[in-house]
Length: 125
Ligand SMILES: [Zn+2]
Image 1 (cartoon, rainbow, N blue to C red):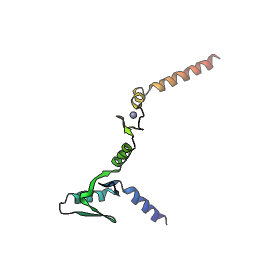
Image 2: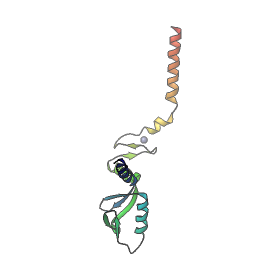
Image 3: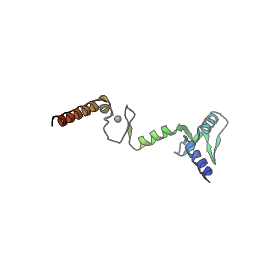
Image 4: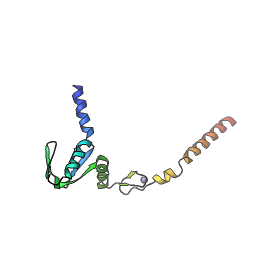
């Protein structure tokens, strides 16, 4: 039953938004549902929300976050840090991203020169 399998996979990948509870529980939902929950959280009289099979107290919701934000938080918790150029580094790792980008064509030029020298050597032999 390949269609059934695909349907399941689609459901998993659609869940790109996370309803994060104060307790740390993560409830992953799709964009559409995230927007509905977000709207409901703004309604004063609603205390409990049904999310799939779960029922949550709206007062216990810490926020609704994108998968990227959740990933960033997870990395920071693991001691990683992000430099100005957007690259994640391990704890204690020195950032050399800026030095690599300073002379983007330099290594290329050096290689061309070396190759020319090789060619010249070959010709003189
Ligand atoms: Zn860096």
